[in-house]
Image (cartoon, rainbow, N blue to C red; front, side, top):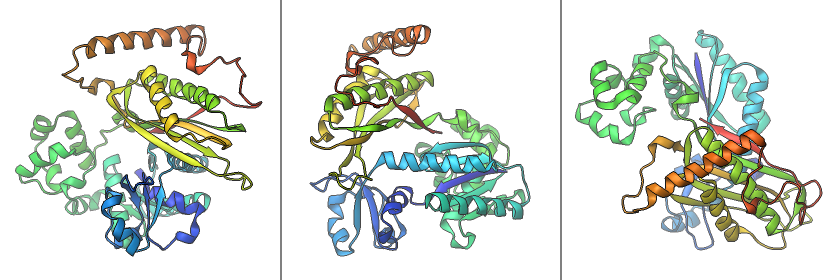
Length: 420
């Protein structure tokens, strides 16, 4: 059966690893700032119980937060990617799950060649316990005949305490389970489709699965048809190609700390260039760029500082010049002098396929400019592929041989990909 592993309240769970004294108290993670801007991105069950919801603007619920003694923690994307990678490593080492892939920063899919529900539950319990023991992150697990049914099973594991975090959905239980899942909760059904489906009187996942194949294909095309097949127990989705990735991260924990903004800009520009090249390789575009910086949390004798910030791109892009420009802007925003930085990274987020781009109709020269830039990027990639990495690069990236302002042991980046 196909299996799905979903981290519970992931951002908050990651933060509680280093702040265990907050367990059992209401905690939210937000892209907060000193002026109470931003929104709640994640929250634990205790925070939900006092009336908070994901997406709440901080300023609107400030009074409730104060009254209920809710702890607000700033978001740390680099931490979540690191822990997600750790989960991947631990599960892969067990060799219990075939084709194990990371769908997003807090979700994973795989396959177990076992149909017996009792054995599957036992194996998933072992994985659940292993992940909690190794990473301190609680997870919920589901298993079914397809990826969609496995994810639906996880929905029950998360929402019904009786399952104790694990739900197996064999073929003989499928229809009963789907009759209890609302259309809006079906994985793969977009918001735009829900209205059309509701007009047709389709209210549950079971209703949708019983519609004629031709009707589904006519209204919702290939994507809707794949979901329909999966709900009926026929595998139709390949995770590797269903959607590429939600994000790409390039980061580095430096061998030696640095306080130099020039060094950070040079290295971050290299990260951005590498991430941009990866975007182009998979024919994807990013809609957001995030930069993060962190000091060495193990050096308690030094002043501590960590920050990240994000910019939304006006038009989705894979253009290195635009992405490096965004990094330059973000570094100006969050860099602070007199801190010794140990880690830095770039995250390209909200990825879409390159064919999905919609150009700004009010920009007369946008199409020509897009074509020129794509030709430039293609030429650079081609030359570097033929003659070696970074044979052609942007001046801001510096020279591989240039060690000015660069402490001994300063390393080039590695990549951490959040695969769909």
